[in-house]
Structure formats: structure tokens, C-alpha cells
Length: 328
Ligand code: UDP
Ligand code: MG
Image (cartoon, protein in one colour):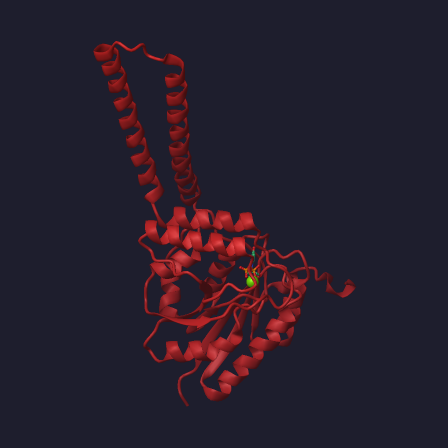
């Protein structure tokens, strides 16, 4: 028999009690099919409970008791999906790792195809790419497109529009991703930054199987700023250029005024000139300091070397905790 290969399925979960059973049913079905086709494959399912407020953790404990392939990590609070993925990748033991959402928007049915692509040795990573944003609001899609356009203009790291965090990776690529220990994690950028050969599988957007999305519009907005700050220093350059332009304008204005006064003998209209320049320069300065501030705040968080996540419970120490499952 061929050498055993372990696939770690990493699933960040935040308040996913509604979809968890559906997801588990689907992933076990697909794994069984894959094992029939490739008997050398084994699976582990690593769920990361990102400080859920519903019964996600209770359900994970149950699953871990029933099925030895199920492992879980439960955070001490909500750390965000990025932290969940990082924790999952750090704890996964697999020769291959696949990161996917719990809500079946990343259909497990793609796994066989992804495995074929990576196992062939031609690719180090297989991922899906949404070619439509069906089911998403118009305004959200518009902002998303705008974000990708800006991002790809100002950053050297290419961020593919529609690429997702649904990724099937070799151990080598996982180790590369883990070697980026930054605190402000923007996975779309990180996955692209590490390089390697990536196969994109195109598909139409699927809506959430149940439950609601945890992302608000502002959440996404903040996330896109994170992406820009994390992977481009262009805003710093822009602010420098803006500063230079405004200085230039100021100098020209002074020269023009002096010439007007000396050559044409026109009186200098003081008040409007003054107000205009104060507003202009004031605004510009605030803008530039704001940009500086953004980078500084990120640097500040980075130099603190705070952990990306903190674990409270895993399938190994679960017996130390009170399980209030039975009463609900
Ligand atoms: N998620 C998480 N922590 C969070 C928010 C989301 O682990 O703080 C997980 C969530 O459980 C899901 C995945 O990230 O498995 C994607 O979240 P969601 O479906 O809400 O986002 P969308 O698909 O709308 O981008
Ligand atoms: Mg989703």
C-alpha cells in the first residue's frame, strides 16, 4: 500500500451551531468518497471555536467524543477568523492542510479536485475563485471590486479578485505561511506573498447553508484597510507627494501675490487667501498625519509581539472544564 497521507481540514467557527451538523455530514461524506478512490488518505478535522457565544463548543465536544478524527481548539474569546486560521494551521498535523468555512460556502465537493491538483505535484496549492458574487448586495460587490482595483495598483503582492480562503495546501506551503508570524494578519495577502504554484478553480458563489454572516459592512471596510496597510506602503508615498504638491502651490501663490503687488500694484486680498491656505494646508497635514498614524499603530501592535490567539480548551484538556451541555 502507498504511504499514508494525512489531510487536515481546518474550520474556523464563530457561532456556527446551525450549520455545524450539515458541515460535518458533508465533509465526512466527501472524505469517505476520497478514501475509496485513494485508500492511502486519512483525515483529521480541526475545528477552531473562535469564542462562539452559542452552542458551537458544546457540539464540537460531542463530535470529538464520537469521532476520533475530530479535534478542536477553543479560544478564550473572539479573536477573528484570521487568528482561527493561523491557530488551525499551527496545530494541524497533516501532510496537506485545507482551510474552509463552516457555512458550506466553500463546498467540500471541491476537495477531490483540489487534492488531485496538488497531489499531481504540479501545484502546491489549490483554491477556488468566485466568478460571480450572486447573493451579495450590489453595494458590497462594488466596494469589493474597488478594493481589489486599488489594492492591485498600489501593492506588489497580487490579490486575485474573487480568490478565497478556501485553500488546499502542501505541508511546505503551510510552513511558509506559518513562518509569517505577523500580528496583523491579512491572509489573502499572506497566501499570495508566499508564492508557490497555485491552481484556481472557478465557481459560482454559493450562499450560506444556515446562520448569518459575522461580517458587517464596516467590518469588511476595516479588513480592507488592514489589507492595504499590511501589504502596501503606497499611502505613505502618496502623503509625501501630496505634501510636496501643496508646498509647491503655496510657493507659486506667494510668488504670484508678490508679482501682482510689485508689477501691477494690486492690493493683496488678505482674508480669503488666508482662510483658503489655512484650510488647504491644515487638511493636507491632517491627512498625512492620519496615514502616518495608521502605519504607526500597526507597527505598535507588531512590536508588542502579542499572541495572535489564546486557547482555553482543546479536545485534550476538555475534561478539565465544566460542560453545561446537559441542561440546554
Ligand atoms: N469566523 C470566525 N471568526 C469570526 C468571524 C467568522 O472564525 O470572528 C468564521 C465563520 O464561522 C465562518 C468563516 O469564518 O466559518 C467565514 O465567516 P462568514 O461566513 O461569516 O463570512 P463570509 O462568508 O460572509 O465572508
Ligand atoms: Mg460565509
